[in-house]
Image (cartoon, rainbow, N blue to C red):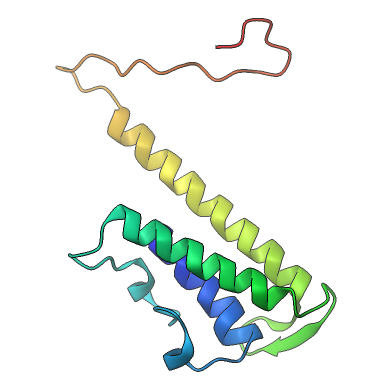
Length: 130
C-alpha cells in the first residue's frame, strides 16, 4: 500500500499538477494495478524512501499553487489544489483502514494459537493511560 501511495502522489502532483510526462516522474505513475507492484529486490526501507521522495516532490509542486487554483481533469472534471489535497488525505485514510483490517486478520487467533496481547486503545478521559 505504501508503493501505491507513492504512485498516487506522482499521478496527482507530478503528472497532473506539474504536467510532467511519465518519463519525467521519479517512479511509477500510471493509473493501474502496477501501482501496487513491489520488485523482488525492493526492501521495505526502499519503498518507504520512495514514498518520502514522492511526497516531498508533491509538497514542492503543491507550493507553486494556491488552494483555489483549478485544472481540468478528464476523469474528475475541474479540480482545485484544495480538492486534490483532500482527495489524497481520503485516499491515504482509506488505505490505512485496509492495512488495519489486514493486521486484525493476521493477528486473529486461530483455534490452536494463543490470542495476541495488545495494549488496549485509550479513550478520551482515560485516567489510566497505558
